[in-house]
Image 1: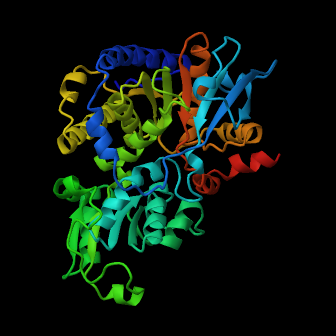
Image 2: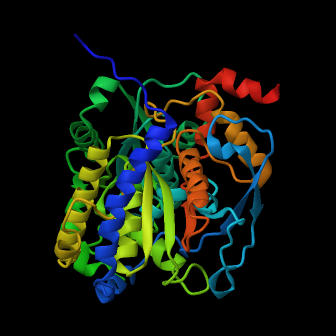
Image 3: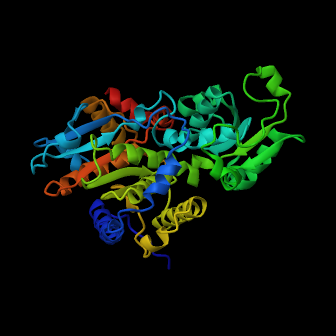
Amino acid sequence: MKIRQLPESPAMVVMRNELHLRTFSTTIQCISKLKQCNKSLLSDLLDRRWALASPESKINKISLSEMQGQHARVPYLTFSFSNNTRPSLGDHMMEKRKEDLSFYVVRDDLLHPLINGNKARKLDGLLPLVKDHSLTDVVTCGGCQSAHAAAVAVSCAERGLRSHLLLRGEQPEIPTGYNLISSMYGNVTYVERSLYGKREEMLMRHADLVAGDSGLVMRLSDTLETSFSDWKSEEAILPQNDCGSGITQAEAETCPRRVIIINEGAADAIGLFGVIRLVKYLSQKHLFGKDRPIKLVVDAGTGTTAVGLGLGALCLGLPWEVTAVMLADTLEGYKKQEERLISDFKRLYGFDSFDNELNGDGGIVNWVERVHPRKFGNVLKGEVEVCQQIAQQTGVLVDPVYTLAAWEHAALLCQREAKGDAEVVMLHTGGTLGMFGLAQRYKSYFKSLQQ
């Protein structure tokens, strides 16, 4: 007899998350004893060219105020929100008070009109590497409304590179959101879901087609293996061919293609560096500093951003705890992803001391479930209205698939930390153009906003 498993209540989810947190906190206490974790090596790694001119990001402070008699779908929505867009930071940060329920939001959603959030951070260290290798074409993949694919398309176009985007599923009748941006800036091919399931084969096959008989195909891992020691060089790592910068588009079409494959979501070790650069920026004295306890919350798609945040805090010896709200995978899957990225990071960049610091099962990221678990990509009734409430009260736009999950957890966490010393900080990972695609799928949810 098949036993049906009943869905868990929000209280049960919170209890399990608390158990994960206790295990994670024990690991963090062990790690924090080793304050000088290869800081000089990390400093050398971050002393290189970047896609973003500056790691700077705006910081807002969100305050919660209780609404009497308000009955909401989740506990924290008995609160209204207000936004201080110029909060006091650094030494001027006010002492925490019990009645001061608040958390900070790092506004990475404002980095670029189209390339924002964690997509911009992961491409921050990757794109200069692509240029260094005199590559001409980039092949990557994603869902129909992939923010990653759109970010790659726009970034490549800005740098005179050609992008080839393999999008899962069928072409929508009316392109909108990230799908429209991908189509405008890149070369889009729609792939049947059965074929998309074998991503590595699909990407390599398409890259071979783009390269042709006279071209060259490289994986991102190949470039990392062969060129890391020369990243800081101002000259190209590989010999320049006749198709360098300064030629016309017509001339470029006749040159041999040099194609690189970037995995879905840029979920590679090189994608960690832009996130680590952000951690170093946030830990400056005039911002959050290096001594103040921080509980950093982020939503997790591939989990790469969360691991980058954890590595940044670890390498810089910061008393920061990184909590990632799981959206697209299981706890086991995210832990495997964390192990893979850390292993690649150690192997490529010489951080051998991690072997001692990461013993045990705790890891460097506290993976938790969202308040209302569901299949990835699904939206629950009422969540669009929650996003509307947040937008109208704070001017911050979150989406119901990704960033609302981080907002929910940050709001709940700041209540539990009201008596503690730690500050709660949410990283806004962008993705707001995805709302256009959701409006196509969930028409009734968005129509209700006007009623």
